[in-house]
Amino acid sequence: MRRTPMDKPGRLWNTCRRHETAMETLTFILHNLPAIGERTLEHLSIVGVAVGVAILTGVPLGIAITQSQRTADTVLYLGSVVMTIPSIALFGVLIPILSKIGQGIGWLPAVIAAMFYAQLPIIRNTYTAIRNVDPALRSAAIGMGMSVPQRLARVEIPIALPVIIAGIRIAVVINIGVTAIAAYIGAGGLGTFISRGISQTDIRQLITGALALGLLAIACDYSLLWLQRRLTPKGAQPRAP
Amino acid sequence: MIRLDALTKVYATPQGQVAAVDRVSLDVAEGETCVLLGPSGCGKTTTLRMINRLVVPTSGKIFIGGRDTDAADPVLLRRTIGYVIQQIGLFPNMTVAENIGVVPRLLGWSSDRRRRRAEELLAMLALDPEQFLGRYPNELSGGQAQRIGVARALAADPPVLLMDEPFGALDPVNREAIQDEFLRMQRTLRKTVLFVSHDIDEAVKMADRIAIFRAGRLVQCAAPDTLLARPADAFVAGFVGSDRTLKRLRLIRVREVMAAADGSDAGAGPTVAPDDDLRRVATLFLTHDRDALPCVDADGRVVGRVTRAAVAARLALEPSP
Image (cartoon, rainbow over all chains, first blue to last red; front, side):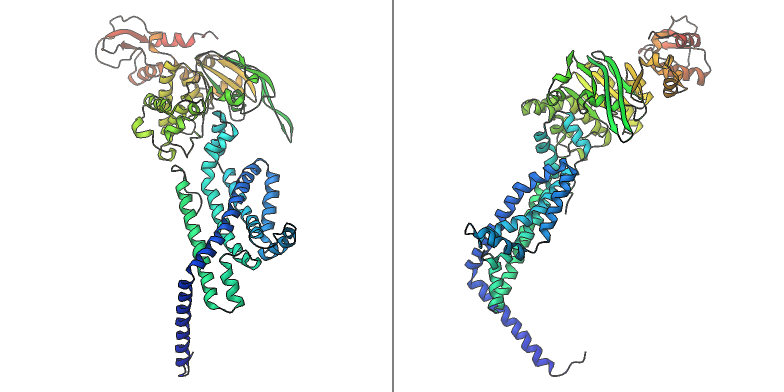
């Protein structure tokens, strides 16, 4: 492309605008640090409770369905169906249902929706990990006189743990995204900056929200990766990324 | 010690009912090593797995120490039976010490006692406790791992040991070594051992008695020497091999055929010891073209002689069934 002399002032102006935007955003961030912190905590409270509940339900369910191929297929299919529902649609469905107990919008529907999205990766990874435990180990454990809970607690779950945590990592990252949308139903969280940024055409809030969400997702993923490595039995090969 | 009474396992298959184990009755005395031998799919492993209730029998009874195992809680029963499998099955998330301590822990032993027991067993298996207790299974060679597998089965000192092709996955050198170690240990421990194998040489070496299986049926159960000398039918004869007389040679010790020294074997040349087997004698006969060899003790004193005629006479002897 040929450069015309007219380009130069235009580019210069753009560069100035970019610098200005960056400076303004930085100023906005610095002036709103307490608000960002608060929104981050709101975000984490939704993700934390949703994933917590999903672990308490999904891990036992993932272990239970290893007993029956047909149940496993059904449960994993239902899980995949849930994953295909757009989160905004799920919020829409939850509003009339939860309105009956006066909780149509806000924290509770956000947690419930996020919890649904967290189920599949946790159930699927738990199921796969337990299924993949070497049958010889199961045979040895039973043959040595372990009861079913002992076998699960001492052999199968420790060996499956890295893969289970890998599932939890996926669930957390998905939930950080779902919770960002939940700002539209008044659940708060870091998505608030983005929704306000859009409605008020305020690029500073948009960038702040996007930046914070990205950093939060990366930070959560890395801390869980660290946990996953810590909990990988020393004698077991790393089995999941 | 272990009595199987018309033990049967029938599986339903698309082709109809198939008896994997068909009315097997067997008595194994206390301290005896009985090898269940046969081609794959003959029901020997299913028989073994019924004893610790990994497979539930269709009919028939199993008595251990006179007690009907139907009446026992399978989980508690299994803790009193050592179990070694071919795939070894050491738990990768546990150290060697923790692996050996699995059953003792299930039985509620203190951690101190578990540790002492693990050290004792490693020493018995000629593995340095200091070096091995803290290792994980992926830091062991195949032979070391199976030694730990055996130690784990022996940890709670069970009277009965079930071994399912325990040394089948090892290379021949390692297999020989671990077989020898197990025999040495078994001489002092005197466990009642049921040992599944498909290898006639291993069976001849390890067994006090060999039970030969074919298509779910027990076809012959006898001491190795009897089995090799007088196979019950063509199947057994085929299974033990056409070189069964050569196999018998390894079972017979020089002292069994040794005659008094008559002074004719003086001078240099090959000698044998009373505890050598006849394989060595036969080899020396052939390589040195001899008909007789002097037999010397550990100090080199001649204590007797062994002749071709004596060996032939011993081989012709029908062992009592």
